[in-house]
Image 1: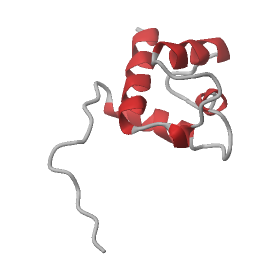
Image 2 (image 1 turned 120 degrees about the vertical axis):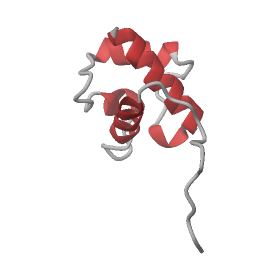
Image 3 (image 1 turned 180 degrees about the vertical axis):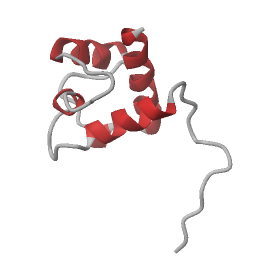
Image 4 (image 1 turned 90 degrees about the vertical axis):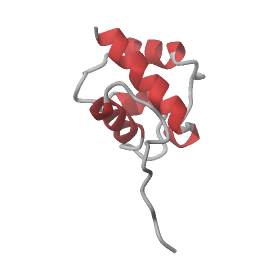
Length: 86
């Protein structure tokens, strides 16, 4: 089996670094909800209520876990977090 990179990324993101930071935070703590995982974000630092608001605005349900999200959902969440910080 071989892995091949994409010529074009499968999802468009506005801030690639933020996108990868959000994905990393979602999986930083095993078996934790996305809300708890976002608490590990260093940039931007989110308060719990800000993280909950970002999850809601991204169209995700309360209690969702990182492993349940698609790339598109992660991209939407990262964009939402970026907008909240602007």
